[in-house]
Amino acid sequence: MKYPIGIQSFEQIIGDGYVYVDKTALIYDLVTKGKIYFLSRPRRFGKSLLVSTLKNYFLGRKELFRGLAIDSLETEWREYPVFYMDFNASDFTVPGTLELILNARISAWEKEYGRNEESLDLGNRFAYVLQRAHERSGRRCVVLIDEYDKPILDVLDTDIKEIVAGQERMLEDRNREILKGFYSVFKAADSDLQFVLLTGVTKFSQVSVFSGFNQPADISMDPRYEALCGITQEELEHYFSEPIGEMALRQRITVEEMREVLKRQYDGYHFSENMTDVYNPFSLLNAFASLVIRDYWFSSGTPSYLIRLLSHTDENLDELTGRYYDPQEFIDYKATVEKPLPMIYQSGYLTIKDYDRDFGTFLLDFPNDEVKKGFVSLVASDYFKSNYEMGGPVREMVKSMRVGDTERLRKLFTSFLADIPYTMRRKENERERERYFHYTFYLIFRLVSVYTVYSEKQQSEGRVDCIVETPDYVYIFEFKLDGTADEALQQIEEKGYSRPYEADSRKLYKVGAVFSSQTGTISDWKVTE
Image (cartoon, rainbow, N blue to C red; front, side, top):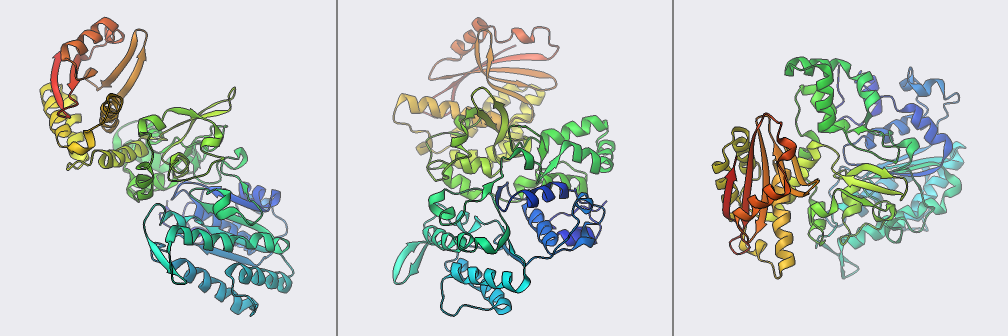
């Protein structure tokens, strides 16, 4: 079986015999029921392949679709003028890049269809090209734009500037202005358009890029098209039973157990209230090709713009995750540096985990283990400003808990916390000190969640700070800020936090730990069995 890793060309996938998950029935439904669409999906989630498939469909290349679902649905196979633009391959942090790319592409189209010499504006020039293509072919035009938002994401919340007409402008504002003018063509050329699709990571507010032209139908959370990109459970089992079986044999587990491993690592995305499970296709294909479970998607790119955005908000990661939100807060939204949640969600680092039909609200949390581990590690490195590489101390903490070495665990906690710069832990008031204290341990235990970790777990008598379950040990942690370890252990006893584990055969440790707001590290630590 050949896996199209890094291949986004539909014709190459079909022509060279790569595995193709057939989405053409959904594509046929899309092109026959609407005209102008916008689709948001995380990076490396199949958007470019979708655009390539649409391009070949509208070029009437029937032979490429032989045997696929659309082969029995489409009867006419007309050829339309197709105008395709991909912003993904360019670096827009260089001033002038966006103008150069747009001008080069429109100039190439003008050589084929003609140019209106009276107009210098990019949008008007493109509108004229569309008009001429319509007149020459007798058919309206198709416009496909992949990663429309990259010229903005590249420079979002940066200080990069550009000189325009002798005046200094923020490159972010300049790129928004250029795109706004370019996309306004869809209003002027409405009668010349058959179909339009814009794909991207996030949707910016109407006042920035999408104003000035007919608003696209946002199908990002449309239940009909939730599986347009990505791989569903049904598709996983239909197309990939062979590599799943091979991986199961290699790991000496059953096929069902292997499916569960894949689900925890790569599944968990939901794009509508239907809650259809969607797997990350990039990670799955890489895992099947190598027969090894790794963090392929997260390691393929660092979401630096998200870290920049998080630095502007007063909300910590633990305050953003595991909460129910009104759709206006992350769907019908204005994505700005002050409100990073919409972009975190659209970028794929959070997803819908539940839908409350009574209130119309959505629970947002990490989609799977790969994303949780990678994103928390990235956020923790930035938050702590530590000299440590996150992976090393975390692995040592995991090893200590695996063998029941609580003294080693204490030393690791102490040294890790002591390495955090004083400026990070210096807080002006008690509320901020308490908040820093809780967030510090939230991040640490999110990082060590190779084992089952319950943070702030609710029990009948109260809320436990943290419980970690390993194959041989159970650890119940109670942390105090500027208190005593005896007080922490007393709370574990009085609240009966260990009662659910009385019949458990694993060894149980109760850990009372004190975090000092003055030193920023562990000042008192006691363990009872």
